[in-house]
Length: 438
Length: 167
Image (tube, rainbow over all chains, first blue to last red; front, side, top):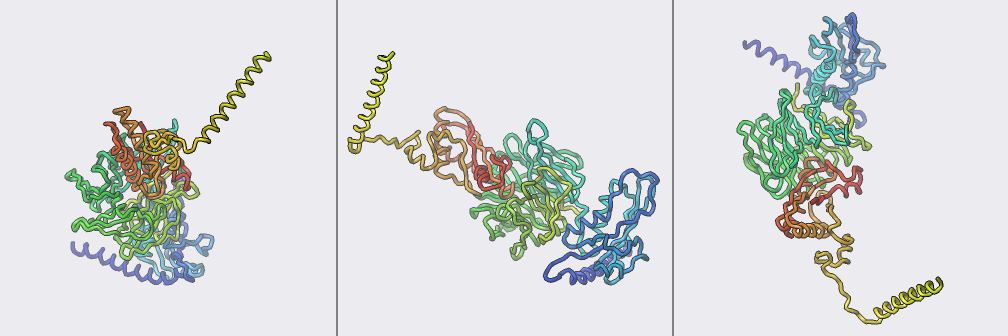
């Protein structure tokens, strides 16, 4: 029993020790002439070892998806396969020299085996080719269907990410967003959709003829809270993805909006103007009670919790314009967080509470250091909104209107690499990244 | 025929002359008792004052009030229009009105929802203070979801930061 418990711990410690040295060593190579670069990595197209007798559907190219994933994080610079001098699929075929010659620091190889009919197994290995060592041992994804190959690519990407940066990847996570369309009788239709992190495989989970706003994931990824409009105005709803059912949480007189789950998932903070001016309230799912946590004549809205659940960040106009404040639940102390710029709103913290992403001066996305308040610009547009961190905090998802065309974008959290979500189209807005790592 | 025509001309000339005469008369009278209506349309302002605010004619012809960026403060023009509508509602007695608040697209949608409600509330209390004679006022907040002008520029944004008075 004890040995069983300690062995994995030992292994984890060992891998972390290994990966730490690897990333530290590689980091030296990523700053060139003051220009920050991602780690150069080569993903060799995975070799199909045994093809099914009659395959009609095209097999998604795992290496292409992995390349795109890693590049979007800003931490990697995948090399084009045209540069490759060899195409190994197993360990004994790897010649470190081939990879040093094309300036690769890391290498990923793999094989795809057809087990039966529509079932495959994917095996892969990760190498530090500068030191000519394999990182960890071989990995495998057993019994996977062709239709799940994109998921397989995301799982592999997450493993590569973890092995080489020491941080968890976020490629196997989900996003939610709202799409507006005008399909019939000139009547607007609003859909709440969920999809893979890159927007692939969008599925409608809720539809309405009135606007839908502010979707936000429960910490376990099983529910989405959002704002819809009843005939009397904005209300807060929770949709259960497993049961496919929605429940109204707050439909008081006035505006009910901007829900945010507590980190343990037992409470929902939101804003309501039921008593005149918009204040922050906390709904408790167990007791079904609503507790008012602040009262001020200004606009108080867009709450979001600190990762420890002890404080609530929110937007307030009490200084005259919208700024971000931090409210400590126990001490009831309120501290203004943002001082730079006319307007800061819709702030949320990353998983360890060290950085905050928000909308700055009406439509720029900025990341603020939670300690120093120092700002890092992700965008400098007038039209960007609804930012949220990836579960690992290394990327930011937001909505933009690049050349008047609404788009969902993912940026590395240093603002360097931007990836439009190509699988998402139409009048899209209000994206939200799930906090769940799968 | 000719005679009739002649008569017409004479009449016309007489008219012109009388017009001239009256003009001369007016000029000749020093500082006449010019009646300036200091309470045009019951607003408490003269028509010229209203014009200076940007209200041409009857304030009741204006049903949309505009706001500055990230502000729910009403300017003088909006205040005059809102109060005129309140009096009109009181005069009609027991009408209910909807005040539809809107915001421009800048800033987050969540904040704009609250801001649009606040604009509606400001108009509601201005009208309430004037007295609506028991008429109901209901504020409907739309946030930035229903722009009057979908373009992405200052002119469009100015048109979108608004409260529409509907009764």
